[in-house]
Length: 88
Image (cartoon, rainbow, N blue to C red):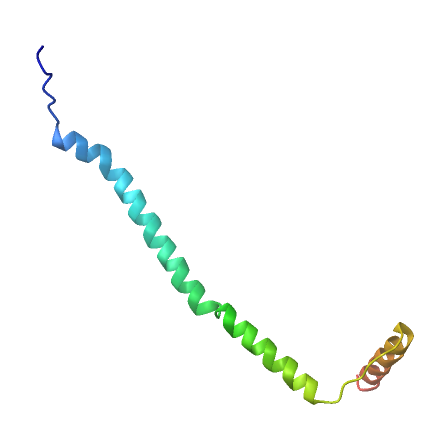
């Protein structure tokens, strides 16, 4: 039995593979650009957590007001609304 010889046209193979390779490279470049921009725009999650913890700790050191009922809370909020209207 004769083995079939396989002749590969290199130019045809390159023309066939080149668009796929270019698309893959473009996709990788775009993904890395997006990742770099996200790192610059959005701080890491650990920074959010740290800032949140600092704000909670600071708030716990200050004067806190506890409302036993929603009516007490509403009355307190109306005081702020009244102050805002007076200064307008």
